[in-house]
Length: 171
Image (cartoon, rainbow, N blue to C red):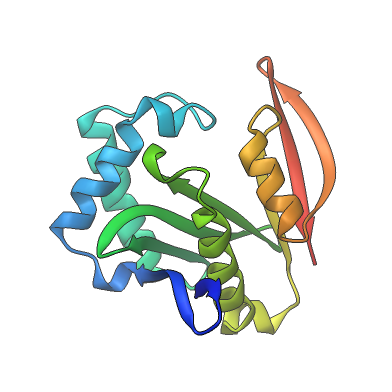
């Protein structure tokens, strides 16, 4: 997907599925999940061992199921984040993580739009029209703006352990 004016795109991004994963991606995954800035709206950063276990679990689940789609976000030949869609209770839960230096550039929106398009064309999605769900912390302004921009509707707000989460849905 490209953004730009006329015929010259200003920004081009691609997504790499987990079937094409290599050691570079594992190192990136671990770096992402250990970064306090990235994890600030998700949870505590993972230790080296926990991040490695998480990556291996993700690989095994992704390869065995059409109900979990994880893709690395590539921008200018560099892995800069990941996006994920997971089917649970007839809803596709969407998530995205970007390195801090790529925040505020519209890249999360582009990556999510690509993921949504791929999801809408997938067999697992087409079997039944599922709801797409995104949950983010209420104080994560960028994520809330993103889901509003992508056409999601705010359907619920809940507070648990002193953390307020917004639930966005798109049918």
